[in-house]
Length: 307
Ligand SMILES: C[S@@+](CC[C@H](N)C(=O)[O-])C[C@H]1O[C@@H](n2cnc3c(N)ncnc32)[C@H](O)[C@@H]1O
Image (cartoon, rainbow, N blue to C red; front, side, top):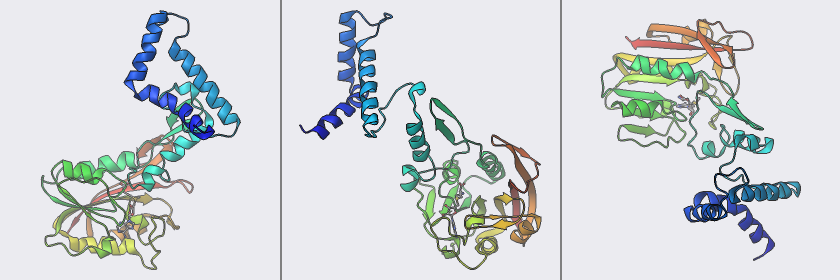
């Protein structure tokens, strides 16, 4: 066994101990025979943990950055592992790269010895707003979820019995008998045989035609074109549920923020039924009716009907 294999074998020990019931049983058996289980003095488990920690500290001192062992007390979470966990669980991490990251309303932040809410994002009210709006739509309705990757909303609607088409050029990995994924931009969606009963556009259209999601920037207002196209894709009397960033009008490579005029332009031709505004009070708190500030945009929540 060369030095690298020995090192790997040593680092694999805590994993084997945690995962292999035979190893765990053997260690418990030794503790039982020594009579150390249940006593104040350290058990074999504790000694192995100490040795393991010492070994890892030595390796870290030598510049070896090992993968963290599973298990362990929160108080032993160190800053470098915390940074790794933040990256891995975030929008750039492995799950995201694999197309299986679902933007959580409350992402958490790891720091040395601490895990706390990083923030509460607008999904905290956008998602229930969508479910509330769609609650009045009969089961089995045809719903178009526009830009629905990175979200479980389409899957929830499908699981509630609706027939959901998710249109998004990015992968949507959650298969369900009631979910169809059209892996294209909305303007590329083939005309459906039957129009949709409802369209859900949750935090999506503000990105259309911009570069952020790996799509080419398009010199055209694809957001306005999308809402116009939905008027043909949704049946007369059908429902639109729309949420977008709201505040001082702005656009960058990532998204647009709409003011009242911009929102009215977006909803041209739709019969607006509900139109709410919400804003952040602080990084953990959103409230309806809170006005946006120059530094902090809020969100507009709209339901409308196709006349
Ligand atoms: C903020 S993300 C996901 C929003 C999602 N509805 C949610 O609830 O989290 C916006 C999505 O819009 C998609 N998108 C961008 N341009 C699009 C277009 N022209 N047609 C359809 N989807 C588009 C992106 O691929 C991205 O997945």
